[in-house]
Length: 414
Image (tube, rainbow, N blue to C red):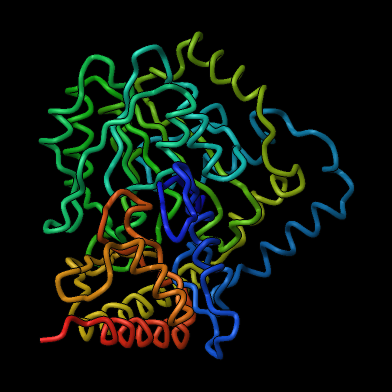
């Protein structure tokens, strides 16, 4: 799910639509091949790049066993294997006041495909969708392909990246088809409280729109707020939950995601709606059948200690990041991350010389210090930076020290 679009113009590299992976590739190209410094990437949200994050043996054994069983070499049903849908329905229902069934669950190739499915199913002439800023740009890319108008509402850094509900009220109209929330937050590292989610649900109900809840970082919360799924409020407003194994199980390359309708009141169970969803899935190819077949065992046999360890590491690395930022005057963290794997920091350009914006900062940092971070423009906030803290502690500390040296070198003379 680590992609998106951004416009960039740097040293003759000009494009109007470049993915997050694309801009990170350009940053890698900027690194001086003759540098003796090892490359430290704090830009890509792929925990498998760090040695301190790895999936469970149960997960690997489950996939190996289903592959070697010779039972899962053929096509899966377009909505996904029934046992896989049942397992995900049971897994998500643990945190809900009602029970999901396999009919509510559709298997996708990662959360990215789930995002595109939601855009395709909600698209209609004149439709618009409300997206968070900063946010995950793949929504905007998908909406543009579906000719769905994008309207951005702000997340408020001074309030822990809460949703600006007044902005949502002002932006929405009769053509608004969905409100998107990302919780735990990418790129901000925020985690919404029960009360905040309740207010979002009530606002969406009042506006007569669906909520798309991107929960790919579900349960990766280590602050004051525990993770609360938006589906809890499915009786208040129809919710489409998007998720995957990618982050919690540390297997983003397995591309096992889901599109789930949380709707006890039955809006998504109307025959025409069900038919539309099923027909659209007939167009798609989901994850490999043998990986789908491994999901029930993966979910059932993964022990809580594995999840606890992952969260503890993320909390520790986030604290390293925040502590190091305190010693860098030109970078400001408005609030400490409480979940996910990334955080946003504000760049104070007035304290720097010969740095024009966040993109310029990121490219010069890559060239001079061999450290990769994502310019905030890539996620909708100019002159901010996204730092991924899902990294080995030693590499993260060294990377932050190099950022400090870079900022000192470019500091405006007093």
